Image (cartoon, rainbow, N blue to C red):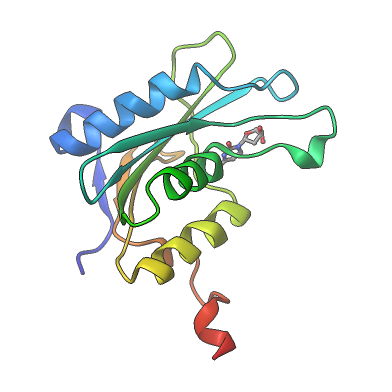
Length: 155
Ligand code: THU
């Protein structure tokens, strides 16, 4: 498996990754984030090239807020249960701003992403913007959550 790839400009990404970032940006416009005003969008591409998107969805009861990554993965699984997820792009911007900010998945999302990866026995690549303003492509969720607890621990 190749390592993490870093790119200075979005234009330097491969066409599929660029397209997923574009779809994630579109999805972020559907975020419901009246409390944090932090708009997150995610897009996944499945092994039949279907693209599913999602955005964060907040609640007045704050702990019930749901991240864009989990909305997207659960939506993909619920609508295309027999498909594998090949790649996910995540982006974020503040309310009313075009400029993208760092959106690296939270710990809870990393755990959920890893569950998908272990279940489907195939790595999921993640495309995201780091705080150093580089676009990176991480080859597997396991890179985001080393020494993880997963179903293999329960055997
Ligand atoms: N959020 C995401 O959607 N994904 C992340 O990876 C980090 C955080 C959302 C949750 C909440 O609605 C808002 O961003 C602020 O935490």
